[in-house]
Length: 308
DNA sequence: TCCGTAACGGTTGAC
DNA sequence: GCGTCAACCGTTACG
Image (cartoon, rainbow, N blue to C red; front, side, top):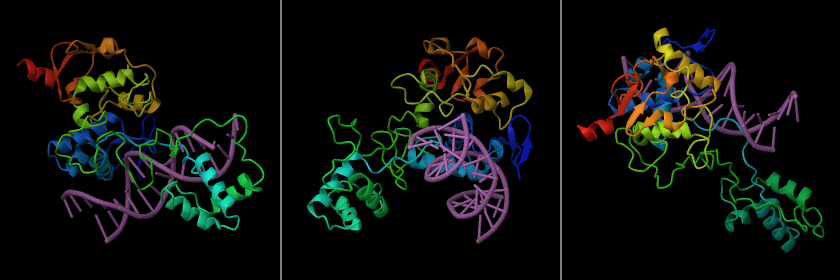
């Protein structure tokens, strides 16, 4: 039984803070995968970060499967399977054979490749379509008229859904195959992959650019907010939770507003802390790939290796 | 002791 | 604006 925590949600058995129903901050998720890649056992990661071992297991499993450390899309509804195209085919089948059964229509949708097993309408759905949308064959369907409907994709899944089909979780990144290993850096250029994230610059730029057109991430909390919050640094002096600043965690939870502009973060190859991070704790705690290069300045490890 | 996973209570967002 | 539904979340407990 988690202990209620007045400000930051609840405290788990390990003493870590979590918010029920909400994903862990990306910083923690990243650390979990980083530590796993360093060969640290999940049980040790769990204890060190004060995250339940079940959660560690889940995050690592997901990373193995998808190459992404990000949580899935929360909320929303499943897309409709009865797209205009499907309805059209149902109507065609019915028109060609008025005595056709719904289950036969379902089989034909599969056989003709109109749908696959994941998005084929149920028999009851087909019956409903026959009853409501088709009814009398002499009447045009609602969307058939002088003004055609807007085109819809054959697979109407909302792009925010990473996995097009239930039970068929595939990586949404191009060129990604199923097999993956935690201990090996990803070879593909995944915006979510740790191998890319470990290039902290890309990490930060994507964070700062979240929400801009073409960004890999929507401008929401799920997308790297915790490292660009004005509240991020001060919490170190207040005692971290899970090795992560409380305020950073809180910032993650509350969807704070504006990340610093990229230009304020990156100065050429140097990572320059935004002013709002003044007095920051050592970022290398969160990002071991960063090397402190002086007051408020960090180098990414790759930059360091390049110049040494 | 470690790990995978089902159950649980919770949040979220499309409809 | 609100309720419903079905996604997802992390924790906990169990084997």
